[in-house]
Image (tube, rainbow, N blue to C red; front, side, top):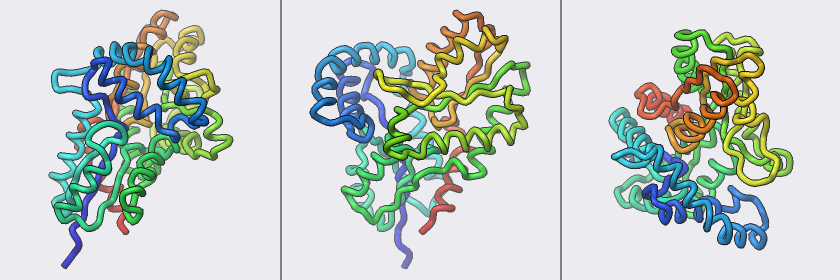
Length: 314
């Protein structure tokens, strides 16, 4: 008899609500992960538990309030939808979802899957590109529970992923006469790449190369940037927010922006890009700032996930 197989989709996580106390709980767990903030614990934890968790939760809560919906966090809504659609598509698998930080927890869901009779679990982190700060925490959490469970490290090279990404951009790009396409990836500290040998930057550049080749764009028609800088350390560059301020002065006043590192809308896309970066662009003389949303609850993306699973069968 065949083993009962299961897939666990894992997203980053989200606060339970957009209230400051819930945001504080989430940030404490997220920013307390030594893989996310790779500083000596004796140095970092007093800073985190001091000024950061006193000031940042209220500020972040105000941002979350601007993107929160009646149904809750957009990231949670779309992760639930992705898992449900994949389950409907793949009757041969038990499909569940979990969050790296917050609820539902990875260890709890794996325990529940095993209790329901699933003998072979594959974990699929919902990040096209691998990073020590995103996929590695998932790998480490899974290892603590059962080091025989396979974790898929990335899927940026899967043809259907880059094709769907290109298609989502193409639809808008061809509809208007844009001056520039901006491909904005979540940033990480430069030291993670140089000292820790994180392959994230390399995989982001490869994603951009695959997508622009499918779109047939010339070098001067697109920009590759990084967003979400946190703290004083040097991060991957160029910074998205710096470039959107500069582009209008370079006569690029009509911009289309896309975030290939995200597969579902969240604070970084809905607030940081659509609100914050757009304001900076317009303040500096920009005219059109359009955003290509992540895949969210697209059935085409669910088919990509199904293909990624098939390509990573044991």
